[in-house]
Image (cartoon, rainbow, N blue to C red):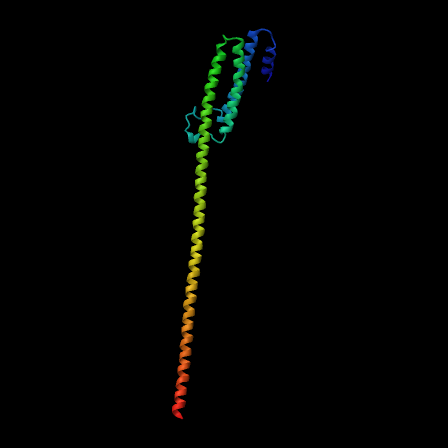
Length: 193
């Protein structure tokens, strides 16, 4: 912060070369802070890709499209002091080199943002599919349970019908036997008289 303050004071000087140098240094400080934020995002050793880690091994919990977009936005702001320095001193080739490097980095980070967004969409689609499959499995299980319950009720009802028919048949047999007995008693009574 003190360095930024000193460079800002140098901008008030009438010497264009001093102003250009101050702007360049301000750009360096700003870019350095942004690069540190980027390193911290990927871990102290730099980006996971630089460390030779596969996509699955990358520390994705911190590296999100939103976090990278903040870095990109900061880098875009970091370009302005370099551009201003070039306007004041066109021979300041270091400023142009830094602009080119930062623009290349911005492009790579924007590509990474898109890749991460696609990855998130795929993961969300996969999760949605799993949720949908689970819901279907739950519905099938519920349906199977209902079918089992219905089958049990049908079996119970069939057994009850069978028992009722058997009871009716037994009752009918008793009635028939009683009727036969009454008929026999009447026959005996009529033949006896």
